Length: 421
Image 1 (cartoon, rainbow, N blue to C red):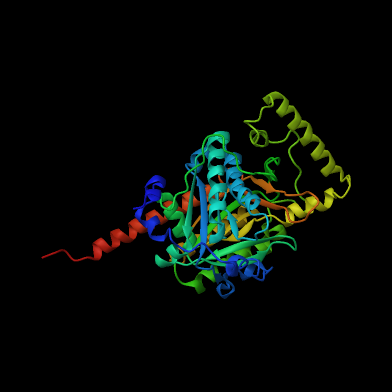
Image 2 (cartoon, helix red, strand yellow):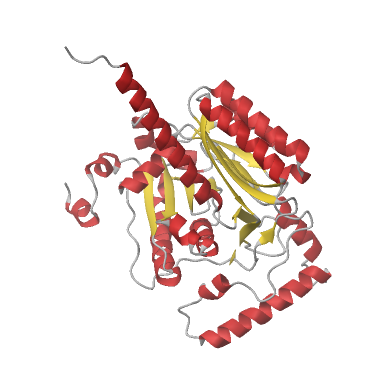
């Protein structure tokens, strides 16, 4: 063990891959050169996915005990931290096009090895900010793709064009799930920065209130394949068909014309500057006045210079990540309770057949957290989750079901095993 390893607390597993080469210019633009597809039903055409370069890293972060925080009404804060991870890295690497996915209570990115130090720095400061400002613990890891493959998994990526302005990464191969497991074990850990360290969160916006369902239910869906791809692809096709033919706009949880911000702004938006030198009262008043002005301009459609509010609102809806593939189908959809029943019944059937493990969660509104580098550009991105549990609650149910299935399989093997003579 080197002195540096001992100071950073690296484990044996981390040391084994810490000498992974740090990237090359030839792979830096790998993701930018991928051709996007715009038909979401093609996400299970797995030949569209290409393996990440060996010299890349997976940056992964999640909020510790997020389910508990959400149960106490802190869903907005949890989502804000998840989005902040992506905003901090994007601002640290403004010229780099890299794949990422928002997970509700965290986020995952893939980056070339040559940018490892910059991303570690951004993540460490984001973890410090989450703790200092929002009283949430964010654990962070940087996992080499080479380590993922050495463990028998892969990370393959494709680009889905949610709109003509924004594309999102889709991942398969099982490597993201393995990296998450390593994160929770404390492997490849990135330590938080010192007290009061702040990342660059320019463009992070949290001023939207809960966005109510128009059809009765905001359904959070996670369905992870078990093994055979053909049966899983049929399951995904069935779920998408139920949503497509029985819901408005393929189950999109936002109004077509885009949502309006809350009248008085968000408490989270004020907390972004919690440690500023301004008095909290003055900050709150300024935030409220700014929110009132923003809502008035957006609702009235008043053009201000190059800013076109009605176009901007439509882009919010079009650019939202309400459906994705992250080692499995993940969606936040607006549907009727009857369609939610049908989707859940199909998922139960698939689980009983050994096709997938799944979790769903129902709520009556959605939460939106945004990255808006400029309000006159069209490439602003918007991360949506259920406003009362969302992906975190669905994942908890999936985990419980997976544990129950594994326990049942173990019990069945015990019964089938003949007793020793």
